[in-house]
Amino acid sequence: MNLKEVITELSKLDVYEKRSISDDYGELVLLNTPALHKILTDIFGPAIKASDKKPDKEIIILAKEYGGIWDNQTLFKKDSQSSILIVMLWPWSDKQHITLKIAAIKPK
Image 1: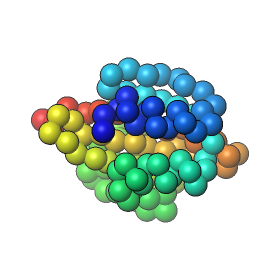
Image 2: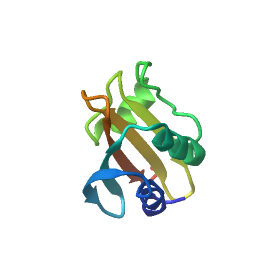
Image 3: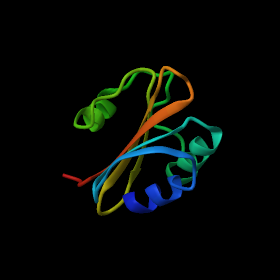
Image 4: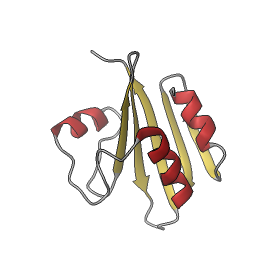
């Protein structure tokens, strides 16, 4: 599944705002619901960085270009032959909304 296909799946949910969409990056604001987490887990498998864990060096490097990642944020990753797809979840302080950043990174 590529970035655009993931965004199409996520668009079935209640999207509060589409901030940016390109071939290699997207940013959405959604309601923080179990349905969102289920879609991401179905596509990516379990998060490689859960919201209650500290990020390791690999995760820090992956997220750096996209604003970094904090302890309370979540990161999913899926490798393919053409790219590494990552999704970062940044929860809002209102506990209802979440910013989702998705990026397709070309392998080095």
